Structure formats: C-alpha cells, structure tokens
Amino acid sequence: MMLYLLRHADAGLTRIFHTDSAAACEYLMDTASASNCSSGSMDSYSRRQTSSLALPHQASQSPRHDQYEISGLNTPYNDSERHLTALGRSQATAMGAFCHKFQVKPQIILTSPFSRALETMHLVQQKIGLPPCLTLDWLSSGMSPEVAIEGLAAYSKFESVMLVGHEPDLSHLISSLLGMTYAGNVDIPKASLTAIHLEKCAPGAGSLRFLIPVDFIEAH
Image 1: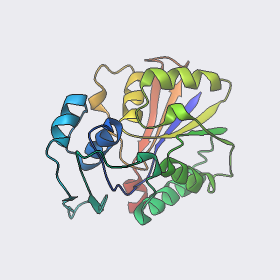
Image 2: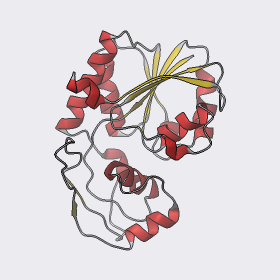
Image 3: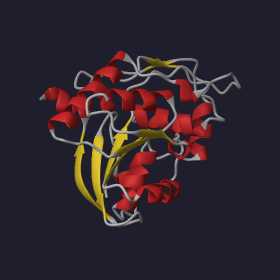
C-alpha cells in the first residue's frame, strides 16, 4: 500500500483551556513552543492563563494564526469547529494542484471529522478527480499510532490511501511506521504531504518515499 499522510492546512483558533489537552498540544506544535506534549506541560502552560497571545511574525515565514486566546477558564470551546483561514485554503489548493500534477491520486481518502481537516480534504479532492472519501472518528485530533494502524488495516485491500489528520498525531504515526524510536524526530508542517510505502500495516513496515512541505510547492 502507498500511504499518503496530509496534515490539515492553516486554521484559526479562538480558545484553548486546560481540559482540552489535544487542542493545546496542537497549539504548541503550531507555534513551535514545544517539541513534544504531555499532560504536565499542558497544565503548566494553561496555568499561565494568558488572556491573549499574538504570534511573532518572522520575516522568513508566512504568518500562521493571527492571534490565539489561551485560558484556564472552563469556557465553551469546540476544537473540532476550527475552519481554514484564507492562508489555509490557499495551502490546500496548492497541495491539490501538486497532487494533480504529479499523479498523486489515492483510491480512497480517510479524513478526520474536524472542520479544518474536512475543508483541507475537499480542496485537495477537487483537484485529483474526486476519489471516494470516508470521515472516521479515529482520525480525530489525539489519535495514537496504535489506533491508526489498527484502523488502516481495514483498508489494506487498497493500493493507495490518503489520511487527512492532525499534529502531532501524523508525526507520531510516521515515526511508528518507519520504526523510529523517538517520535520527536518527525515534525510535519501544515498542509504538508508525506508518502510511505507499506509492506503491511504494522510498526516498522514502512519506507519513506517523500515529504513535501506546502511552502516548497508555493515557492516553485
């Protein structure tokens, strides 16, 4: 099986609180504040109770999220409803065009039910001939490599499969499939596409074919 792993494109974020560790972990990955996440690091970060945080925009990078609000208060927040920004839509469209140009056409797409993943998937799907797509709960933010590998086994009859998901979930899955002992060695950017050839759906059974950051595509 050829497995394509697509991280969702840039999405806005309004609020994170300490009980939503998966969302907080993705926030830290997005802002490059930490290379790995744990419940301890989430709790210590939330205790700062920063009311708002504007990200520093580095001249060498495109802006990611305009502003985040980090709070320890138990206020309503649904991480699954974050939508793509204008930058995110541009990223997903560019990746879809890349897939079309280089004949990256999976037989089936499996996606997280979160809005930002669905929107990324639809923009890419439109560029590659509308392959069938399934929305699966196990691809939601917080997925473990073990759950992903077990879920993928049900689709082993397909020659090519695309997963659309989140960080650090996809990096951890890539590390597991490649037999790496330290998941922190992999960190995939937003809207990046990774291809792994799998002899079987098992840890260590994959070989890396490519990892394409969307910034590389947009620069060319």
